[in-house]
Length: 276
Image (cartoon, rainbow, N blue to C red; front, side, top):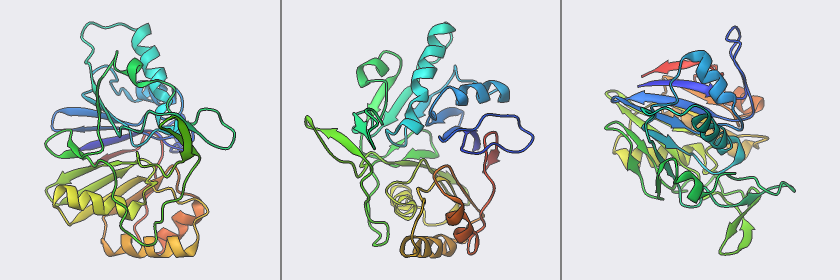
């Protein structure tokens, strides 16, 4: 598997690529190409052009959840498709939780979720909206709705979501992730891990039947996290004996420092390429 960070909150020194408070990755494995999230703007497209990453022949677009910093780039991708018609362009599948594309609001922002509605996306992509795990390739699986089993990663509502015609506190049931099964163990790929990064790893183990975890990467949603959350998270991840922990996006500096005391934390930024 080859994975490229198209967008992260940081850009690597010397790359001259864009960064924004969002996340997008391109994953290539088993002859398939999967775009995981699309960031907040067209920055992931600009970086893809600089990196020579083909956005015209995708097999899947996978959304980790419905928040703006992971889905608003979808509208820019559709605009790119409209402005540059190509007869050989692949019609990709788009996989997300059934609640990922609904209306969300947060701190007075009228729309905190996807700007492109389900019916519009269906004009461009083959939609698969499901809470169940789905294998996207022979070795890469979308984990479905994350079961919340740890006692230290308690659900924390973030804004509100529209449910049956009314807004309710949003505990983000649409949060999901990917897992890659290599010959030597799992690579767990999170978007924001609102369900908890440890819960996400446990879900990956259940879905794949593989207990050995090589690497964990992506956003961990550890911002202003208190010791009662950070300490057991670091202990859990340290016990996995990872090759690397590539925490980024919604993982703040204090969390990275805390995790680095026990885990092999690696640098992340727009343009980084990893191979497993």
